[in-house]
Image (cartoon, rainbow, N blue to C red):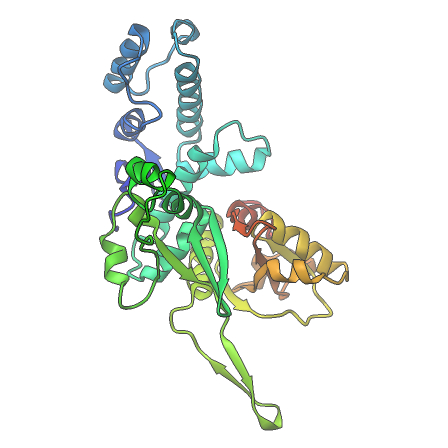
Amino acid sequence: MHTFWTACGHQHLTCNERGWLVAGPDYWRWWLQRPEMALVPESCKEEIRLHKALLDTPLMQVAPASLKAFKDDDARENYELFLRFRDDVEQAGALESAYMGWMQSGDIQLPPLFIDLVVQAIVSRVLADVQDAWVWRAAELLFRRQRITIEGGRVLAGDSETLDALQATGGLGEMGRLLMEGGAPLKAADVKVLHPDNAQRYWAQREGLGRYAFLLDLTHELQNELPHGLILSMVNARSGLKALSVVLTRWVQHFLGVSVQIEPVQKVNDPAWRWHVGLDATATALLNDLYQGKDLDTAAQRQLISLFTLRFDHPQDMRADVQGKPVYLGLAMNAQGLLKLKPQNLLLNLPLGRAV
């Protein structure tokens, strides 16, 4: 397994017989050392005492009175959230079981950070044997919000948080922010499209802004129509859409135990369209409109990044009324050009023939 995603703590997890991730004491110690939980000079005596006790015995039960004695409200809330998260995972028995429970409940009581780090750890397991940088970069879409830009007809996805930080500081942290506020010119941030020439640099980046400073090309294959109705496809060997398809295929297999094939497509021309799943909130709304026969206005069409077809390798894994039919997927950015993919949508909304 690649180790450059150690920031999600996957190195402290083990696998059960199903291949799902089980938390041990070191995983909870890793959480206690994260910035949200680590001690600071302002930590009160009760927080220091509890923190040390949890490091010694990560699964110890904590009396509510211990948290009430905290002087800092934010610290108290952080511990409450951590303990709820810890207990959910331990009770579920695996990160995947806990994740499915949160998603199926429809009432998630944890901050997005917790969910994103769980997804990142699971994806690390899902892609453990993959050596393709484009697949790993595409996997970031499952737990990192992306900012979509269109340059010269190319659709590029960049990590939203990283791009915002680079724009604000020029990649120089607080010093860069001060310089920019003072009007000092800074060198343009080094953000490049992932390419064979810099793929090794992608693997080498471990932490900091550079870790997520690579753009992913989500442009569709170009097609040229030739005489006599023939179509020539200009294949992009490093397609971000194809890489994302690999990630989503493995994601479904890992959780649901069903084999599927996912392919990006430019359009859907299917009068017998039976089932669709939006991979994000915007795509869900757009696909619902298309399914109902509504025309998309120009602005909505620009928001749609790609469509996909999902086919089950074994039709008997599908509901009887849709067996053999493709499932259409959609990926879209919102009006602000942001994309937050919801990987749970694929787990909760496929027409499965049996309960998982």
